[in-house]
Length: 320
Ligand code: SAM
Image (cartoon, rainbow, N blue to C red; front, side):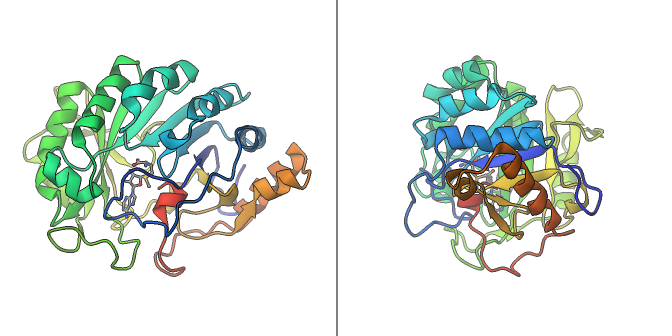
């Protein structure tokens, strides 16, 4: 599936819930958590229709995807979809201690675990109450279950920028990959941290900081590096990525579409029309009709995202 700018779409991020068990300072808190709209069979059909038009990789995200009681069954259904080659999940890791093994058995291959601090108190501040040890236990369980682990760390000035090297050392010690993500001020000033408003630190500055301690060799972009500018940390098995959504948007290489927890296609993280897959399924649409909706959504996909043109963005619902 290609859009009018020649970009090819092989990757679908499915946000299976907008509920979350953390309240990170950079993520918009919904007024009321909504019950899940998409059922397991509906998610299975949505994924099948996407595979029919060329999607090969599915990311399960949220909200917090592991809060769905049927997340193992969802993973199994996605894994059983002809054409889908990669199934990955973005999670805060809190429930991986219990779920990593069944998810791996169901066909999950990789997890991106969000962890912005290794200091229990700072972690609690950033997540407004989260318990770091549970995430660390979840990471251990993911590794033991054979899942490939990547850490996602949103770096914020005034909050956790002093933890960049310790986070990298932690990842190196466990052979995890890590990506440092530029903080995106999505919420127009909402959600200040304890130490003041979080600030975006350009990736180039972070990379220079890391390169003073570690030798970094740039990697060719790969199927798993996504939008990150990725480096091999010499002498280790770790790759470090920098995601520069603010300082250097990567829209020209975008290969993804999103499905919201309401079952609507969102063609861009920040903009793009919502095409109602679940509404169509409930109105009796065929798989071919659903596939057409993906193609229509692509027609409206913008060349470049426009931050704030459409107001605050609810990352918790869209799934990052
Ligand atoms: N609950 C899951 C988790 O914690 O990973 C999945 C949802 S979360 C919205 C997905 C990703 O979006 C996380 O890695 C999070 O750090 C990132 N994210 C959310 N808000 C962000 C922001 N304002 N700037 C940069 N990254 C953000």
